[in-house]
Length: 494
Ligand code: NAP
Image (tube, rainbow, N blue to C red; front, side, top):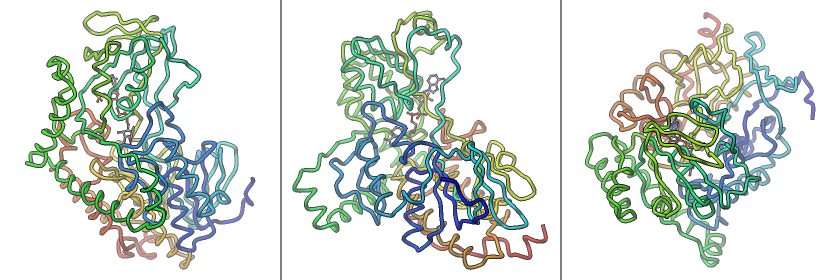
């Protein structure tokens, strides 16, 4: 579909994952009709389209990993698998008519603010141009695979791939497989690969805190009850939300609650691992909450299988036949899987965003991205970020953070529709005050303590995580406060 190039949309959403589709649904709920969703992939789903590795599932309970106005009532289990979550997002698109507003295979390369017309001009790799009053960037945080540049990586003669680009055409049955990384992704596929590989070697740089997952499979009767009486589902949702909110205290450094988290993880480890040497290797040497807390009942048992080995020696190089570790040991493999995460600080996605006065988001941010409420940035009028800086969580569902962002942005877009000759640009001081408050709170958090973590930039500043509870965030974002934004006279005076 080609757009009439002079039409000015009320909003363009970039990205069709949970963040972008939820924003679209919120617009439809609020009567905002004239919007478009541009997605660079060939389907909706975001991370749930991209991550198809065996065992891929959400380690957050499905009943809180859905929108309050579109409950995932038919979900078959508490911790839903990738296909079921992708199905939920398809159903959401269907329910809110988002498919008619969606253009796939549209890689947005540039977005430029037009100071005269107070609109954004958006360009795609395919050469199309779209105009919009508001730009909603919902391109996600975790979609650029990170493959460490180990010496010799290119020399490996076997098959190597990243977990987000799983090679389903590669049969792992009877193969010698290496898994580099042992975090959220690896703990999900390692148990599956262990069942088929002849040998599986897990290279772990840091141990993780892992809690029991305690999967629950919903019976047919339960699902029927949820469908017939959604309030029963809402009650369950609320109770799990409250339980997870209470877990926020565990992310505060040097507290009794934080120690309680350490203890729960220890009990889980000791219940599943009897070998003292293996237990020691799996014991984290940093504060609970510094990295994401994982949930798995299968990872530790997989490591105790005869065909599985955990290696904690540093990787020195990749060789044509496998991996050499720092102790000089040669490990031979047919396949290397990189579960080494994502380039998570790419809050600007792959789009060059140019705001007022020709300043780019990269220039504005340097290595310390910041946004008021995680949503708006000075010098970038009418730009709204979904899942932007400091909106990630460790203790509760990220979807419960997305919904308040969607509501806030919808308020802004409706305000702009009614006030054609104005723009919404957050004041620099407002953003600075917010950042000071946020960083002060974060300094009391385990996120700021000493460990390698994608929550922080290279200076140790936490740029991914929110500092408080979901309820605190909901309250701060409940109303669009126009006084936080520059008045037209101030905008003109700059
Ligand atoms: P990750 O959390 O960034 O973990 C990367 C792993 O690779 C870590 O074990 C890391 O070790 C290791 N690693 C990175 N560079 C390395 C190097 N040069 N040498 C050796 N090891 C290296 O990535 P992920 O597991 O893919 O998870 C990313 C995020 O995706 C998660 O935090 C989560 O937000 C999301 N996710 C969510 C779910 C879910 O169920 N909701 C599931 C999967 C992923 P260090 O720990 O030492 O850095």
